[in-house]
Length: 134
Image 1: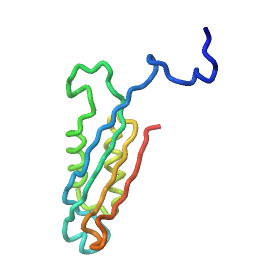
Image 2 (image 1 turned 120 degrees about the vertical axis):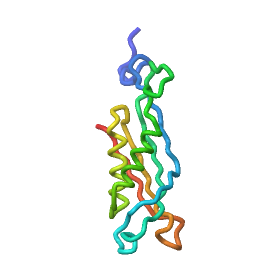
Image 3 (image 1 turned 90 degrees about the vertical axis):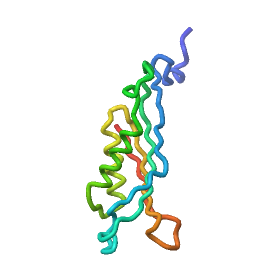
Image 4 (image 1 turned 180 degrees about the vertical axis):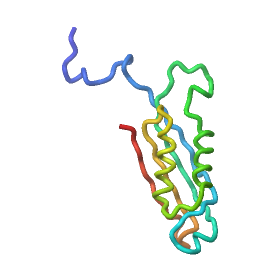
């Protein structure tokens, strides 16, 4: 029996791509970040959240090399934050997203960078960006 044309666009179990989300929540680091003179003199707290969408290795053997390792991602974020002063939270978020997309299994990265101490009257200010592999 032939499927209707409208159903042929849906993946079958053989062609479907399994995806996983890798989450890093509320990573707090000290960063040299900001455009104001006082932000150049003193590091401030930043809170970073990352959500990655990655291809799942369905043939995984329960080994760390089979997955996108969140510890590796955190180490990369720490290196980026520690690499020197950045003026804009947008730039910092983009650098983090770009580093996450270096792993070919990662197809999308959502990065949120918050400055909880920047504006006294606000709980936080920040930015959230998304990058996708095309």
